[in-house]
Length: 379
Ligand SMILES: [Zn+2]
Image (cartoon, rainbow, N blue to C red; front, side, top):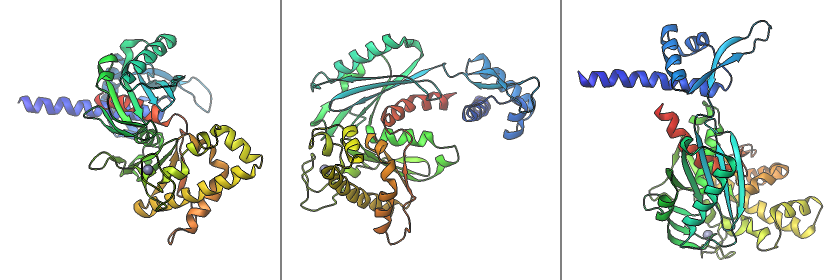
């Protein structure tokens, strides 16, 4: 009998959850009649669930604007401020912090320059900056679902350790103090995996069931693989480490210690460290016709095309480009597509290469989404 009760309770919860998700994905107010029609529930079932969601503060009434004019009908929409999630991106020189509401809209963002991350003080440095940010933005602590952190490196989530971060020059750094110093649930993730999660979230509910590969282009290069709408993490949690695919045996030295990696050719360090200029300055110079920049960019595009075509051969799906470098690629996308297609025995064009929706903030968005998703799953 007890089990039967659990099943009924759980079934009711699932119905409520489905209805919440429908309202969530609609983004504009939905009427009870519309919910009943689209979801195949009786009107009393819809009314019961709406009442529960309203009393939990998860949804609120909203007006449905009629095209024909007249009195607007009452519908329901998600209460976006019920909870907040925080995403923090840690790179070799910066700490970037972002707060989102339950709809994953950006509420606040801050970039802090950290000249040196001290290996044994990383946790303290992050916790201090987070506290300042929350105070400045007046984000109520009781509404925070959790704090997600992304690092440019291989992260062992179970041991809270950065196994290897060539771009931060860190190896086997314990992050156990991070959990103790941050007074919220903490989730730690590799930056490109998080970026891929953000792109997955940005897809329509139908598209989320598809396959795609995400290539993350920043100082470090990484990626993520999504199969049937689910991330494929690999046996050791290192799937999508595309930056260290060898493209040129005995080629340029990579920060990982090997030679000829994709990252050695296409990392943003090719402008920032090799030329001593920002990505913005590089692309501005490129547009003005700087010959040296043009030659370098041509080389970068050639290697990027090889990498993208390799991913296409391995996974047979769309390849989405993300990371801050991808924010500058749009004018060169036709050339990149052409170069990649020329390498392929199957593709006649490179239309499978897409640009991501969040070039700059993908990692933070994705890691904040971890908590938002958890909250929604449990409704
Ligand atoms: Zn490498």
